[in-house]
Amino acid sequence: MADFNKKMLEQLAKAAHQVWMEGKIRDGWKYGPVTDKGKKIHSCLVAYEKLSELDKESDRDLVRGIPRILAIAGYEIAQKR
Figure (cartoon, rainbow, N blue to C red):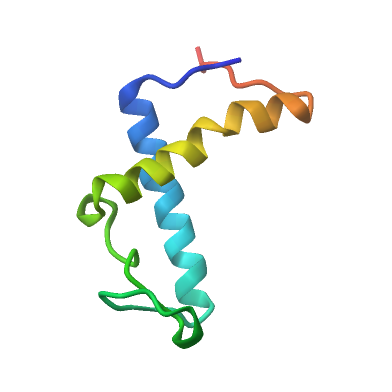
């Protein structure tokens, strides 16, 4: 199973956050300093660089799980040559 180097992990986490934000915005969510699911307000609707370290780690954890998910489906990540 592939492990991502630190730079790659950060790039993928940033991309994952962007995709998550785009989905939320499409669904009518807005930024607010305090998350309120009923009002569709979320405190993480900011650029990746503005996230707290804890929130960035959540995105990194998501990315770290990708190789395992692909392996279950019979795929693996390989570096492009």
